[in-house]
Image 1 (tube, rainbow, N blue to C red):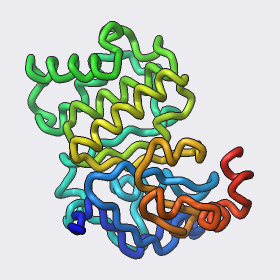
Image 2: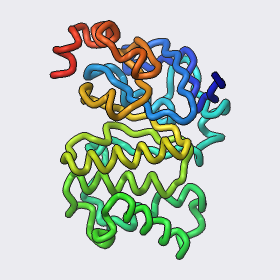
Image 3: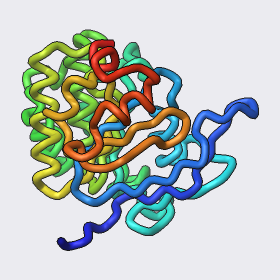
Image 4: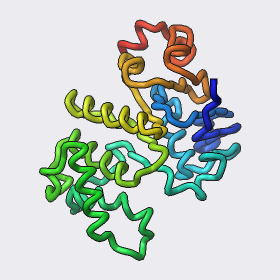
Length: 246
């Protein structure tokens, strides 16, 4: 079996708020080209892990490498879809403008997006089924539509790694299906996707890799190998049937 390259390597990562550890001594190797769920109870540090990878939160110990280098040297290879609740949806801007913001990383902040970037943004909007809403103010969109817009913004970055913090939160079944289909297409294209996810029942259907997290790293690997009663009990402190119905 050919050894996969590691897209993300995390060594001895510890993050604390007010001296209280939120992540403790995390070691994690994420292979290139996987669609990975990060699961764990509320307060487990799932969102903190994503933000630590991005450098948004500074750890008190440990390191994160993207394809073997610090994140600052690999910024253009990583796209981020934040939690819907962390975005100011009242900001007066259109769907198209939000998606075009995803091109700024490759342009730099001095250049303005041109016809090429607009074409890329329109194609991304079409891919997520939101082309007809290109001129709609984001505040006038439904929760599911807003999530699609942020996914489109990530798509135009043409990144190698996509970090997504609960992309299915508060969306309808149609939107969820559309999002997971796009994520699977990205994986098929060799992209690496790390997704904070709450619905344990859909993990085997949606993902091929999973990381169990509860402040400490519990287990990480292929879904078919480690998504089991033992690891669910270690992570949630309750048996499998109770955990998947939470």
